[in-house]
Amino acid sequence: MALEKVSAHDLGDIAGRLEAKSEFFREALAVDAIGSLGEATATAILRLVFSTRRKANLILNTLTLEGFRRSVRGLLYADMSPGARLEEFASLIDNIGRNLPPGTGHDLGSELLHFTDPDRYWLWTRWMWNPQTATGALPLVVMEEVDLNGGSIAETYRRIGIAMAFLDGVGEAAGFRTEGHGVFGTDVFLAAVYSVYMYTTLRMRMTQEFNRIVPELGDLVRRLHGVNRFPLIAEVA
Image (tube, one colour):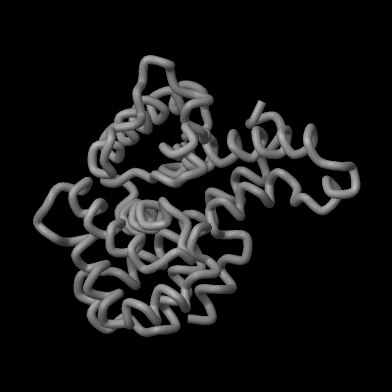
């Protein structure tokens, strides 16, 4: 249903935007560049993540630019397992204050990992799997036998990786990873699944007048991936 409701043109456009987002992240957060990361670029990076797009100033003002550089360097390059690095980074972000919803830390951390090195790291956002509410796109498309909740950020991230590897394999057969969507095909597909779910739920619960202001499905997918205004944000940086 997701692939039917979101046009092939939209899916290809979104995949292209994710490629550009990844290129921007890889260049800005390279091991030899992160030490000179500027405030404008750091702000642009945070605004390209759905959960932090309106919290960039709060995060940078609380951590300071140097603190942000240091925390991101540890996340991307510390000599620990990816899950351990993500858990440490998420704890730092989530402890900033009540103005950040629970889960913001792993949302941001997984996006930084994934888009800096998409062949090595996978995505985990709350619209994919939210342990607090047991909702998201992944439970809609993976087998019931897959237990996504690991009890800790590190273990949950590992289990999300197993589920994503399964979907990558299915995606090769189904075509959503091969029809011009590349390495980000699964990300686009999951966001499309969640957008259809959210859109259907809103239409059932909300008034017709409210539904008129809900973005179209393609735009919802772009928003979930933080690229609805990209590359304009990155160009400002």
